[in-house]
Amino acid sequence: MSNKVFFKTFGCRTNIYDTQVMIASLKDYELSLDENSADFIVINSCSVTNGADKAVKEYISKVKKLNKKIIFTGCGLEGLGKNSYENGVVYGAFGHSKKQDIANLLNKKERFYFSDDLNHVDDVIIDRVIGKSRGFIKIEEGCDFKCSYCIIPQVRGKSRSHKKEQILEQIRRLADSGISEVVLSGTNLGSYGKDTNDTLPKLLIDISKISGIKRIRLGSLEPSQIKEDFLELLDSSFLEKHLHIALQHTSNDMLKVMNRINRFENDYILFDKIAKKGFAIGTDFIVGHPFEKDEVFNEAFSNLKILPLTHIHSFIYSPRSNTPSSKMKIDVPKVLAKERLKLIRDLIESKNLDFRKNKGELEVLVENKKRDYFYGLDQFFNKICIKSDKNLSLKWVRINDYKVNKDMNYAEI
Image 1 (spheres, one colour):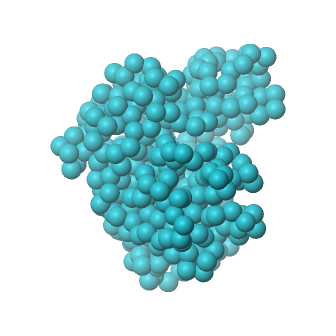
Image 2: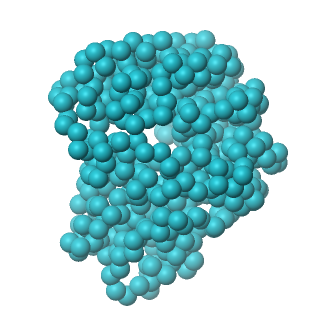
């Protein structure tokens, strides 16, 4: 019997970690890096936007022609996953809470569908990550926020923390396997510890003491959850000099419509403090949400101009069923939303270019090689292309002499 399994992962760092958990739980099954030679294709879906659903749907249409057993999991389970199962397109579908049992699921002789247990917390420990220069560590699951546009709390459940000792043991093992940079992820990272009498800053300090860990990166943080004890860590050498802080919008009127906790005045003060410590700062921004009138967007754009931003994940709003925003009338034409999206992206691209022009030595973890060039990320989460006759794959390099191009930095060493 052939037992090769290919994983296709969509979405966020949390999904990347979930796929690594499944890979670590394969038992007698063999990981395949090629979907054509696999017997099973496991799709770990994202459902945060209509676009995410569309990408998963297109992939299913593509691979079903390969005559493999398709297994569906991830945040799209109750929507696209259930529909694909009922229509006979996928052989089986299961929720996040069943991922550690994947070997038994793949062994099932009949089609299956298992809903998610939204109280589940992982307890598996991964000894190594496959094909990665850094380790993605999930420290928290679920979200207690009630943003009007977001479906994620419904598909990931309420916030619950992973056990600290399990997290630390996970990182120790990855460090022993050669991983020197870890990325902490979660549905709502700043909620870590609220149910276990712990805090994210305390966890960061404990991780920094693990031998072999050189840099800690963080997933997305909520501005309302960044307190003084976190800000006190900004001078620490172990923390990546980049934070992604999710604002979603910069007009208070729109933040109220979105049922967000943050407000621009406080966001500006917070970003200013962090930027003065030399940090690059990224954020999320939703364009075209209902009630984003001209005056609302113009105010938001003016506010974006004065924020010390270097990175942005901006996208056009798409309604998710069973959310409050989905009941609101979309009153921003798609053409206008696209124009606003371009304005924002051009603005932050210009800010990023200015930021990179004023930096000194870069500390880069090289991720991969494509043709004659190596690629990696520096401490500010900016990409760099390196030409070198040396083998730099998965190595740390310090770079002082480099060229600042529009899309990324460039160096020869």
